[in-house]
Amino acid sequence: MKVSYHGHSVVKIETKEKTILIDPFISGNGLTDLKVEDVKPDVIILTHGHGDHVGDTIELAKKNDALVIANHEISTYLSWQGVKTHGMHIGGAYQFDFGKVKLTPAFHGSGLEVGNNEIIYGGMPAGVLVMMEGKTIYHAGDTGLFSDMKLIGDRHPIDLAFLPIGDNYTMGPEDAAYAAELLSAKTVVPIHYNTFPPIKQDPNQFVNMLKEGTGKVLEAGESIEL
Image (spheres, rainbow, N blue to C red):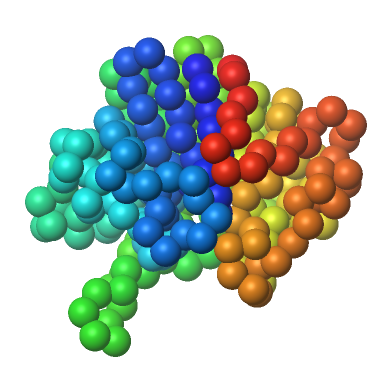
C-alpha cells in the first residue's frame, strides 16, 4: 500500500484495487502536484465541510463514479448534487470492501459555502481512521489539541498519522508534537501548513520536536510504503 501527500491536507492511499483520496483540495491549491483531470479516485473521504477540504469532490466523484464518505450532513448535501455518498458520524465505523473507516472527534468548524454569502451547516468536523491491509492510517483533519487523542491511539495503534501544524486555524507545531506523543503513532507527517500566509510553518522544526525516527516531512507527491 502506498500513501502519498499532495499539499495542504490532501492524502492519497493506493492499493492494487482502490485509490482513496482524503480532502481533495486541488483547484486553487498552490502547493499540490495533482491535476483534477489526472486523478481517478474510487473513494473520497472528507473530514469536514470547508472549501479547502471538500475542494474538487463533486467533479471528481461524478467523473469517476467515486463513493464519497463523509458525515451525514455533508453526505446529504452532496447526494443532492448527484454524488454517490455514504454518511457516517463521529464514533461510528463501517466495513467497506477496501477496509474499515472510522470517524473520530476533531475540534474545529464545518460549513459549506454555497451561493452568494451563504454558509450551510456542515455537521461536526472529524478525523478519520482508515484500517486496511493490517495497517491503520489516521488523518486528524483540522483540529486543535485534545486529550482524547490518547484514547484514539490506545484503541487503534496507528502506523501513520497526518497531523495539522499550521496554527491559526488548527494546532500549531508545539501542540501537534504533543498530539503525536498522545497518539504514539509509528510515523507522523505534518499537513495543513504553508498554503496560506496565516499557516506558514517550518515542517522540519516540527519533526525535530518529535521522538527520533517518528517524524517525516513529505513534499507534494512523495509517498510512504506501508
